[in-house]
Length: 236
Image 1 (cartoon, rainbow, N blue to C red):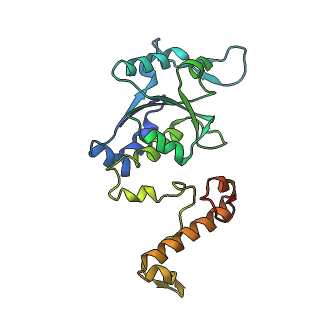
Image 2 (cartoon, rainbow, N blue to C red):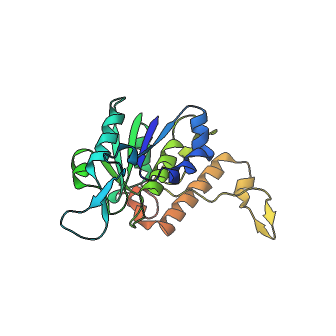
Image 3 (cartoon, rainbow, N blue to C red):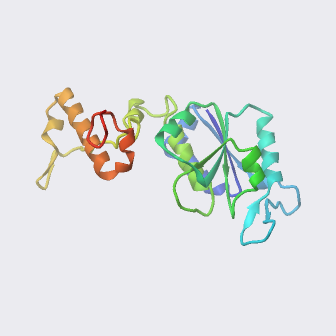
């Protein structure tokens, strides 16, 4: 998988994308992540990529020309299935969407900045807009990093135990169950006995029940995605 990220602040992404799981994925040559400085595609000596908005108002807007120059330069080398713009009013990022993107081969992520981007980009060049939450950040770099991390960990071979990603929260519409590790007892705080029993079926039943309970209590808004016949979900 190849991910190309377009940004005016590449240094914000360098550290994040060169450590931990993302770096291991790159080392294994399972994923290629390229960061492109939008200023390299500016058309003046000042390397300007933003300007005042027509009609007035506070804030600067990313101009259409440098972004299109960058997009077209990348698209000369390969076909991209998605050109994603990270925007607070985009499609909410959920695990099902992450799963879809992880199956793609080539993806571009455009990081917004300042007051946003020229609307013509959104209308004619962007194929999908994604939001990581109902709030506004200084730029799209952190959202782009969040998306890249969520997607890359699902690429086959990235995680040492590939089944780990399949048991994450939201993969089956439920929040993940509680987890415990050694010691089995700490200051009279004990690990549930079922997890020490060695009975696989009973353990799986307990984990499922705990996932359902947590989802009902903590995320009742996700009741429509819960397996049928469980508390909070109409079985009819």
